[in-house]
Image (cartoon, rainbow, N blue to C red):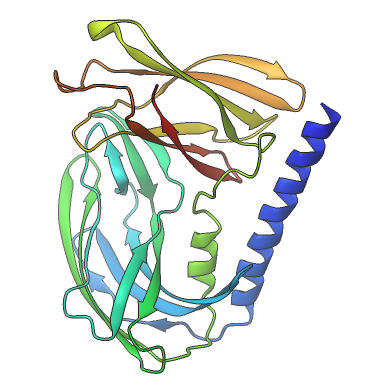
Length: 289
């Protein structure tokens, strides 16, 4: 147990150090490079840009920032029981070889219509930019489709433009803070949070996936999100029994499999599991056997 605590502490220090690097690099920034806001009925969106220091060096990023009116929400890449995930169309961009959208850890949102996965008030999606020619500026053109939802959902569309200078050195606080919320890969068997075990139980319509998650004692906002193949519908995991295990708290979750296509086979299929709490998030792939 002492060894496990030590390894978990080292992992926590690594995450804290990365966050300090990200946020501290942004603290020295002046005004951010940003587009104008594109206003919708209950929301607004814009692009921000700048260099962000990471443990591997420095990368050029854009950030897709959405701000929402009080009481409204928008969605993660997997919206849950209902909702519309954001869609990013970079057609028309100049000197942009690739744009990798990253997703900050989301929240489980409950309302009378069911449970969804997403964000309230504000979110920044970091976008790692790869220029075709690093010596030239990148002219970013984005058509963003998203939803702003309260009692009713309002589809929104934003058309955003921003020129990112070559070798731009301006850090961005908003992008750095969003990056600190993007789920990382687990760092060893004793890392916390992490997936402890996963099994498939039952037969036919009674089939279910059981997942055990390790969280630190006292962690706030502990939750699990599971994504399967595109043709699968997976409800949000239902938390069950909790067991204390020294410095860890093990939480059991169950996901019903009665919404799968009749032709679905489980063996060999891959799941993407995102474990979050108030201060940390990890993402792990699991192959069903």
